[in-house]
Image (cartoon, rainbow over all chains, first blue to last red; front, side, top):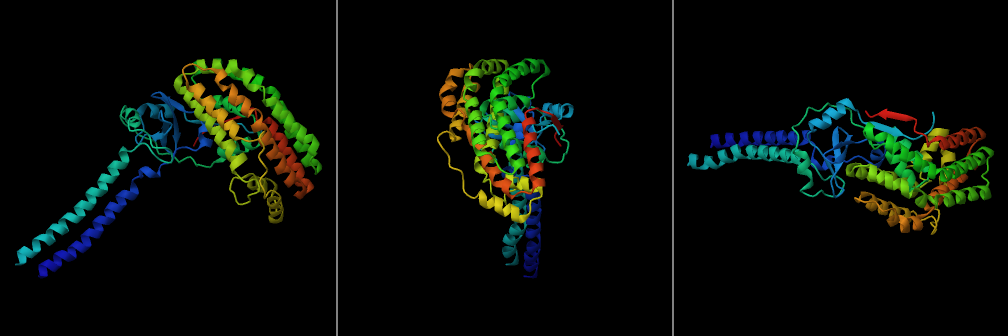
Length: 100
Length: 329
């Protein structure tokens, strides 16, 4: 019985610890629902890069692009061509306001 | 007995943490594979993988995220508060940020210059309106008759633009690749979205709206709480929408343009009905909103504040020139 009690006690320690570890993994990873495509102001003022037949925008450390249905997508891992492009041509934003 | 009782306990103790870890790892893996969704409509399953799978991952440089609401965004919103050129103006602005190859830039700039020449009368009329408003602000009272005439002149000048720009738009279509056309249409819609946000969605008298017109004015002129309250009260009711100012007509025109411009062959005649239905609406709606705003603001200001504001409004006449190009963070 003592052994059983000891095993159960160990379980009470291990299970929450494992849960905490799993929770840390969730928190460390950007959930799919968390990413947000660039706002209209950003699209209107920023030069895109053209890659694989679409315009891609570098925003919040990701490249975003629209598919043929108009929905936003992003690359979880930056394609090498776009990384090279960004290294040589940093994204340019423009303003139309005033001669100041 | 002991052994029989202990087996299930050992199984539970050993398995539960393992299951939790496996579930956690599985969800993280799912997240890394996901590349579509977000706030927009859900992408088709066939769309994402074709693009995602091509290249081996490259090392990414950790960078400071670009703020969703930074100075360039605010500058654009202020631009659209004061300029109401509608579709052709959005197209010209979209060209400025298309990010074209050097080889193509010269040809496109020629077309853009032609577009701007055709829209010059409307731009001049708009600058005349801004100057008239600035004069009224400086004097402490806006001349209603003169200003209404200026708004109508701007609206009338905007009506002939579609016919005048048909050839230039056809040349533009033919000079761009399908991806560049899609980017241009996306940018035109983005400008429309921002214009609509600051001229239709935002309440002009909302003193609590961050980035709103009144908030910007409060900062520019160091308005007192009492001045803000008075302006907010004067702008509490919405201006009525009339058949000549309803921005929904322009929305239809922009959608017609998007459909026509994304096609392999551009037919400017397909835009004629929506161009006629929306002619001058943006100019009249935007102009009337500006007049209403500054009419409410002017009597509340001190002479020094009026001088500062008049100079600020006159500056808006120079907005049409691109003078700043800034690399993003």
